[in-house]
Length: 370
Image (cartoon, rainbow, N blue to C red):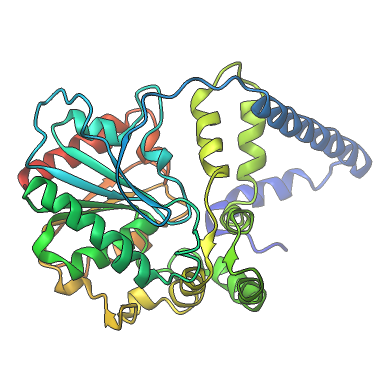
Protein backbone atom coordinates (compact mmCIF):
# COMPACT_ATOMS: atom_id res chain seq x y z
CA UNK A 1 0.00 0.00 0.00
CA UNK A 2 1.41 3.38 -1.00
CA UNK A 3 1.85 5.92 1.83
CA UNK A 4 -0.54 8.54 0.45
CA UNK A 5 -0.49 12.03 1.80
CA UNK A 6 -3.42 12.69 4.15
CA UNK A 7 -5.26 15.03 1.77
CA UNK A 8 -5.04 12.41 -1.01
CA UNK A 9 -6.04 9.40 1.09
CA UNK A 10 -9.76 9.52 0.27
CA UNK A 11 -9.24 9.95 -3.47
CA UNK A 12 -6.61 7.19 -3.44
CA UNK A 13 -9.01 4.83 -1.68
CA UNK A 14 -11.75 5.54 -4.22
CA UNK A 15 -9.35 5.04 -7.13
CA UNK A 16 -8.11 1.73 -5.68
CA UNK A 17 -11.70 0.52 -5.39
CA UNK A 18 -12.49 1.45 -9.00
CA UNK A 19 -9.40 -0.37 -10.29
CA UNK A 20 -10.22 -3.65 -8.58
CA UNK A 21 -12.03 -5.17 -11.58
CA UNK A 22 -10.25 -3.37 -14.43
CA UNK A 23 -8.70 -5.53 -17.14
CA UNK A 24 -4.96 -5.05 -16.71
CA UNK A 25 -4.14 -5.23 -20.44
CA UNK A 26 -6.77 -2.63 -21.31
CA UNK A 27 -5.57 -0.43 -18.47
CA UNK A 28 -1.94 -0.72 -19.61
CA UNK A 29 -2.84 0.33 -23.16
CA UNK A 30 -4.88 3.29 -21.92
CA UNK A 31 -2.05 4.33 -19.60
CA UNK A 32 0.48 4.11 -22.45
CA UNK A 33 -1.75 6.23 -24.70
CA UNK A 34 -2.22 8.88 -22.02
CA UNK A 35 1.53 8.93 -21.29
CA UNK A 36 2.30 9.56 -24.96
CA UNK A 37 -0.33 12.31 -25.09
CA UNK A 38 1.21 14.11 -22.13
CA UNK A 39 4.75 13.74 -23.44
CA UNK A 40 3.64 15.16 -26.79
CA UNK A 41 1.98 18.11 -25.05
CA UNK A 42 5.14 18.72 -23.01
CA UNK A 43 7.36 18.63 -26.13
CA UNK A 44 5.00 20.90 -28.07
CA UNK A 45 4.97 23.37 -25.18
CA UNK A 46 8.78 23.57 -25.16
CA UNK A 47 8.89 24.07 -28.95
CA UNK A 48 6.29 26.80 -28.70
CA UNK A 49 8.21 28.51 -25.91
CA UNK A 50 11.51 28.62 -27.81
CA UNK A 51 9.88 29.93 -31.00
CA UNK A 52 7.66 32.48 -29.23
CA UNK A 53 7.88 36.07 -30.47
CA UNK A 54 8.90 38.10 -27.40
CA UNK A 55 7.27 41.46 -26.87
CA UNK A 56 9.48 44.53 -26.40
CA UNK A 57 10.03 45.51 -22.78
CA UNK A 58 9.41 48.96 -21.39
CA UNK A 59 12.20 51.50 -20.91
CA UNK A 60 15.01 50.17 -18.66
CA UNK A 61 15.74 51.87 -15.32
CA UNK A 62 18.78 54.04 -14.73
CA UNK A 63 21.84 52.51 -13.06
CA UNK A 64 22.86 54.96 -10.35
CA UNK A 65 25.43 52.94 -8.39
CA UNK A 66 27.57 49.88 -9.03
CA UNK A 67 30.14 47.90 -7.11
CA UNK A 68 31.59 44.79 -8.73
CA UNK A 69 28.75 43.18 -10.68
CA UNK A 70 26.06 44.47 -8.30
CA UNK A 71 24.00 47.39 -9.60
CA UNK A 72 21.43 49.71 -8.03
CA UNK A 73 18.54 50.49 -10.39
CA UNK A 74 16.47 53.65 -10.03
CA UNK A 75 12.76 53.19 -10.81
CA UNK A 76 11.76 56.59 -9.51
CA UNK A 77 13.80 58.80 -11.82
CA UNK A 78 11.25 58.40 -14.60
CA UNK A 79 7.81 60.01 -14.58
CA UNK A 80 5.97 59.54 -11.32
CA UNK A 81 2.22 60.12 -11.51
CA UNK A 82 2.02 60.88 -7.80
CA UNK A 83 4.78 63.46 -8.10
CA UNK A 84 6.45 62.47 -4.82
CA UNK A 85 10.14 61.75 -5.34
CA UNK A 86 12.08 62.93 -2.35
CA UNK A 87 10.90 61.56 0.99
CA UNK A 88 9.68 57.98 0.50
CA UNK A 89 12.57 55.97 -0.95
CA UNK A 90 12.35 52.17 -1.10
CA UNK A 91 15.18 49.65 -1.47
CA UNK A 92 13.87 46.38 -2.96
CA UNK A 93 16.13 43.35 -2.51
CA UNK A 94 15.49 40.20 -4.58
CA UNK A 95 16.99 36.77 -4.08
CA UNK A 96 20.66 36.23 -4.88
CA UNK A 97 19.75 33.38 -7.23
CA UNK A 98 17.25 35.29 -9.38
CA UNK A 99 17.52 38.39 -11.50
CA UNK A 100 15.39 41.39 -10.56
CA UNK A 101 13.17 41.06 -13.67
CA UNK A 102 10.26 39.39 -11.89
CA UNK A 103 9.78 42.68 -10.05
CA UNK A 104 9.63 44.59 -13.35
CA UNK A 105 7.69 42.52 -15.87
CA UNK A 106 6.04 44.15 -18.89
CA UNK A 107 2.37 44.64 -19.77
CA UNK A 108 1.47 46.42 -16.55
CA UNK A 109 2.86 43.74 -14.25
CA UNK A 110 5.80 45.67 -12.81
CA UNK A 111 5.83 45.62 -9.01
CA UNK A 112 8.47 48.38 -8.91
CA UNK A 113 6.64 50.71 -11.29
CA UNK A 114 3.36 50.11 -9.50
CA UNK A 115 4.95 51.30 -6.25
CA UNK A 116 6.37 54.30 -8.10
CA UNK A 117 2.85 55.14 -9.28
CA UNK A 118 1.69 54.97 -5.67
CA UNK A 119 4.02 57.86 -4.82
CA UNK A 120 7.17 56.05 -3.69
CA UNK A 121 10.69 56.16 -5.13
CA UNK A 122 11.76 52.53 -5.63
CA UNK A 123 15.28 51.26 -6.15
CA UNK A 124 16.10 47.61 -6.89
CA UNK A 125 19.30 45.67 -6.34
CA UNK A 126 20.42 43.78 -9.46
CA UNK A 127 22.88 41.16 -8.27
CA UNK A 128 24.03 39.76 -11.63
CA UNK A 129 26.41 36.80 -11.75
CA UNK A 130 29.35 36.84 -9.32
CA UNK A 131 32.39 38.48 -10.86
CA UNK A 132 36.01 38.41 -9.83
CA UNK A 133 35.23 40.54 -6.76
CA UNK A 134 32.30 38.37 -5.63
CA UNK A 135 33.55 34.85 -6.34
CA UNK A 136 34.64 34.37 -2.71
CA UNK A 137 31.70 36.25 -1.16
CA UNK A 138 29.89 34.92 1.85
CA UNK A 139 26.43 36.17 2.77
CA UNK A 140 28.07 38.67 5.15
CA UNK A 141 30.02 40.13 2.22
CA UNK A 142 26.88 40.69 0.18
CA UNK A 143 25.27 42.47 3.12
CA UNK A 144 28.26 44.53 4.27
CA UNK A 145 29.99 45.25 0.94
CA UNK A 146 26.97 45.61 -1.32
CA UNK A 147 23.70 46.27 0.54
CA UNK A 148 25.07 48.64 3.17
CA UNK A 149 26.76 50.97 0.63
CA UNK A 150 23.63 50.90 -1.58
CA UNK A 151 21.44 51.79 1.41
CA UNK A 152 23.80 54.60 2.37
CA UNK A 153 23.74 55.96 -1.18
CA UNK A 154 19.91 56.14 -1.19
CA UNK A 155 19.89 57.64 2.29
CA UNK A 156 22.20 60.46 1.15
CA UNK A 157 20.28 61.09 -2.06
CA UNK A 158 16.98 61.58 -0.24
CA UNK A 159 18.20 62.84 3.15
CA UNK A 160 15.72 60.39 4.62
CA UNK A 161 15.48 56.92 6.05
CA UNK A 162 14.71 54.16 3.57
CA UNK A 163 11.95 51.57 3.45
CA UNK A 164 13.46 48.12 2.81
CA UNK A 165 11.51 45.42 0.96
CA UNK A 166 12.91 41.89 0.70
CA UNK A 167 11.51 39.15 -1.53
CA UNK A 168 12.16 35.45 -0.75
CA UNK A 169 15.86 34.96 0.06
CA UNK A 170 16.20 38.73 -0.30
CA UNK A 171 13.99 39.02 2.76
CA UNK A 172 16.64 37.43 4.96
CA UNK A 173 19.27 39.77 3.55
CA UNK A 174 16.87 42.68 4.17
CA UNK A 175 16.30 41.56 7.72
CA UNK A 176 20.04 41.46 8.38
CA UNK A 177 20.45 44.90 6.78
CA UNK A 178 17.69 46.43 8.93
CA UNK A 179 19.18 44.72 12.00
CA UNK A 180 22.60 46.28 11.31
CA UNK A 181 21.42 49.71 10.10
CA UNK A 182 18.35 50.77 12.12
CA UNK A 183 19.38 54.45 11.88
CA UNK A 184 18.99 54.32 8.08
CA UNK A 185 15.89 52.09 7.97
CA UNK A 186 12.38 53.57 7.99
CA UNK A 187 10.48 50.28 7.81
CA UNK A 188 10.93 46.66 6.72
CA UNK A 189 8.64 44.59 4.48
CA UNK A 190 9.24 40.84 4.11
CA UNK A 191 7.59 39.18 1.10
CA UNK A 192 7.43 35.36 1.14
CA UNK A 193 10.54 35.25 3.32
CA UNK A 194 11.57 31.87 4.79
CA UNK A 195 12.60 31.70 8.43
CA UNK A 196 12.00 28.14 9.66
CA UNK A 197 13.65 26.16 6.86
CA UNK A 198 12.60 22.78 8.25
CA UNK A 199 8.85 23.45 8.31
CA UNK A 200 7.00 22.20 5.25
CA UNK A 201 10.09 20.80 3.52
CA UNK A 202 10.81 17.72 5.61
CA UNK A 203 11.25 15.37 2.61
CA UNK A 204 13.35 17.91 0.72
CA UNK A 205 15.65 18.43 3.73
CA UNK A 206 16.35 14.69 3.76
CA UNK A 207 17.20 14.87 0.05
CA UNK A 208 19.47 17.88 0.59
CA UNK A 209 21.29 16.07 3.40
CA UNK A 210 21.94 13.20 0.99
CA UNK A 211 23.16 15.63 -1.69
CA UNK A 212 25.17 17.77 0.72
CA UNK A 213 28.60 16.07 0.22
CA UNK A 214 28.25 16.20 -3.57
CA UNK A 215 27.22 19.86 -3.64
CA UNK A 216 30.07 20.81 -1.32
CA UNK A 217 32.50 18.92 -3.59
CA UNK A 218 31.11 20.77 -6.61
CA UNK A 219 31.62 24.11 -4.82
CA UNK A 220 35.20 23.12 -4.00
CA UNK A 221 35.79 22.19 -7.64
CA UNK A 222 34.17 25.03 -9.63
CA UNK A 223 33.72 27.69 -6.93
CA UNK A 224 29.97 28.22 -7.38
CA UNK A 225 26.58 26.56 -7.59
CA UNK A 226 25.45 26.74 -11.25
CA UNK A 227 21.95 27.92 -12.08
CA UNK A 228 21.05 24.49 -13.51
CA UNK A 229 21.74 22.85 -10.16
CA UNK A 230 19.66 25.50 -8.38
CA UNK A 231 16.81 24.97 -10.85
CA UNK A 232 16.90 21.21 -10.26
CA UNK A 233 16.75 21.72 -6.49
CA UNK A 234 13.68 23.96 -6.75
CA UNK A 235 12.03 21.64 -9.29
CA UNK A 236 12.29 18.84 -6.76
CA UNK A 237 9.79 20.72 -4.57
CA UNK A 238 7.13 19.95 -7.19
CA UNK A 239 8.54 17.47 -9.77
CA UNK A 240 5.46 17.58 -12.02
CA UNK A 241 5.21 21.35 -12.19
CA UNK A 242 7.48 21.76 -15.23
CA UNK A 243 5.67 19.09 -17.25
CA UNK A 244 2.23 20.39 -16.33
CA UNK A 245 2.98 24.04 -17.11
CA UNK A 246 4.39 23.31 -20.57
CA UNK A 247 1.44 21.06 -21.35
CA UNK A 248 -0.93 23.91 -20.50
CA UNK A 249 1.17 26.36 -22.50
CA UNK A 250 0.98 24.12 -25.59
CA UNK A 251 -2.81 24.67 -25.63
CA UNK A 252 -2.56 28.48 -25.78
CA UNK A 253 -1.98 30.78 -28.73
CA UNK A 254 -0.42 33.63 -26.76
CA UNK A 255 0.82 33.89 -23.20
CA UNK A 256 3.38 36.67 -22.82
CA UNK A 257 3.42 36.29 -19.03
CA UNK A 258 4.34 32.59 -19.18
CA UNK A 259 7.19 33.28 -21.60
CA UNK A 260 8.49 36.24 -19.64
CA UNK A 261 8.47 34.26 -16.40
CA UNK A 262 10.24 31.30 -18.02
CA UNK A 263 12.88 33.64 -19.44
CA UNK A 264 13.33 35.08 -15.95
CA UNK A 265 13.66 31.63 -14.36
CA UNK A 266 16.21 30.54 -16.95
CA UNK A 267 18.32 33.69 -16.58
CA UNK A 268 19.15 33.24 -12.90
CA UNK A 269 22.81 33.78 -11.98
CA UNK A 270 24.99 31.16 -10.28
CA UNK A 271 25.53 31.45 -6.55
CA UNK A 272 29.02 32.25 -5.27
CA UNK A 273 30.51 29.17 -3.62
CA UNK A 274 30.94 30.41 -0.03
CA UNK A 275 27.47 31.99 0.00
CA UNK A 276 25.98 28.83 -1.51
CA UNK A 277 27.68 26.70 1.13
CA UNK A 278 26.13 28.87 3.86
CA UNK A 279 22.66 28.65 2.31
CA UNK A 280 22.84 24.88 1.96
CA UNK A 281 24.68 23.89 5.12
CA UNK A 282 23.56 26.58 7.57
CA UNK A 283 20.14 27.75 6.39
CA UNK A 284 18.60 24.56 5.00
CA UNK A 285 20.44 21.80 6.85
CA UNK A 286 21.11 23.42 10.24
CA UNK A 287 18.18 25.90 10.18
CA UNK A 288 20.40 28.60 11.70
CA UNK A 289 18.05 31.60 11.19
CA UNK A 290 15.25 29.92 13.13
CA UNK A 291 17.69 28.69 15.79
CA UNK A 292 19.07 32.22 16.31
CA UNK A 293 22.51 31.14 15.10
CA UNK A 294 22.79 32.82 11.70
CA UNK A 295 25.51 35.46 12.00
CA UNK A 296 26.60 38.40 9.87
CA UNK A 297 30.19 39.41 10.57
CA UNK A 298 30.08 37.37 13.77
CA UNK A 299 26.88 38.92 15.15
CA UNK A 300 23.66 36.85 15.31
CA UNK A 301 20.74 38.21 13.28
CA UNK A 302 18.00 38.32 15.93
CA UNK A 303 14.64 39.67 14.73
CA UNK A 304 13.51 40.27 18.30
CA UNK A 305 16.04 43.14 18.39
CA UNK A 306 14.46 44.94 15.41
CA UNK A 307 12.12 47.67 16.64
CA UNK A 308 11.58 49.15 13.17
CA UNK A 309 7.98 48.79 11.91
CA UNK A 310 7.77 45.50 10.01
CA UNK A 311 5.29 43.89 7.66
CA UNK A 312 5.22 40.18 6.79
CA UNK A 313 3.35 39.34 3.59
CA UNK A 314 2.69 35.61 3.41
CA UNK A 315 1.31 33.88 0.27
CA UNK A 316 -0.88 31.01 1.42
CA UNK A 317 -0.36 28.84 -1.71
CA UNK A 318 3.42 29.03 -1.72
CA UNK A 319 5.20 25.71 -2.33
CA UNK A 320 8.68 27.31 -2.37
CA UNK A 321 8.35 29.07 1.00
CA UNK A 322 5.56 27.28 2.91
CA UNK A 323 3.33 29.67 4.90
CA UNK A 324 4.43 28.11 8.20
CA UNK A 325 8.07 28.81 7.34
CA UNK A 326 7.33 32.46 6.57
CA UNK A 327 5.03 32.84 9.58
CA UNK A 328 7.78 31.77 11.98
CA UNK A 329 9.40 35.21 11.75
CA UNK A 330 6.19 36.92 12.92
CA UNK A 331 6.54 35.41 16.38
CA UNK A 332 9.99 37.00 16.75
CA UNK A 333 9.48 40.56 15.48
CA UNK A 334 8.27 42.93 18.23
CA UNK A 335 6.65 45.50 15.91
CA UNK A 336 5.06 43.56 13.06
CA UNK A 337 1.84 43.34 11.07
CA UNK A 338 0.85 40.46 8.79
CA UNK A 339 -0.97 40.26 5.47
CA UNK A 340 -1.96 36.84 4.14
CA UNK A 341 -2.51 36.56 0.38
CA UNK A 342 -4.24 33.66 -1.36
CA UNK A 343 -1.53 33.39 -4.03
CA UNK A 344 1.62 31.45 -4.79
CA UNK A 345 5.25 32.49 -4.46
CA UNK A 346 5.47 34.19 -7.87
CA UNK A 347 1.76 34.72 -8.48
CA UNK A 348 1.69 37.06 -5.50
CA UNK A 349 3.99 39.43 -7.41
CA UNK A 350 2.77 39.08 -11.00
CA UNK A 351 -0.59 37.30 -10.93
CA UNK A 352 -3.94 38.71 -11.94
CA UNK A 353 -5.19 41.07 -9.26
CA UNK A 354 -1.77 41.62 -7.66
CA UNK A 355 -2.40 45.37 -7.73
CA UNK A 356 -5.35 44.87 -5.37
CA UNK A 357 -3.98 42.02 -3.27
CA UNK A 358 -0.36 43.14 -2.90
CA UNK A 359 0.52 46.63 -4.16
CA UNK A 360 -2.37 48.53 -2.62
CA UNK A 361 -2.26 47.02 0.90
CA UNK A 362 1.54 47.26 0.92
CA UNK A 363 1.36 50.90 -0.20
CA UNK A 364 -1.21 51.67 2.49
CA UNK A 365 1.01 50.16 5.18
CA UNK A 366 4.11 51.93 3.85
CA UNK A 367 2.30 55.26 3.80
CA UNK A 368 1.38 54.84 7.48
CA UNK A 369 4.97 54.07 8.36
CA UNK A 370 6.84 56.84 6.58
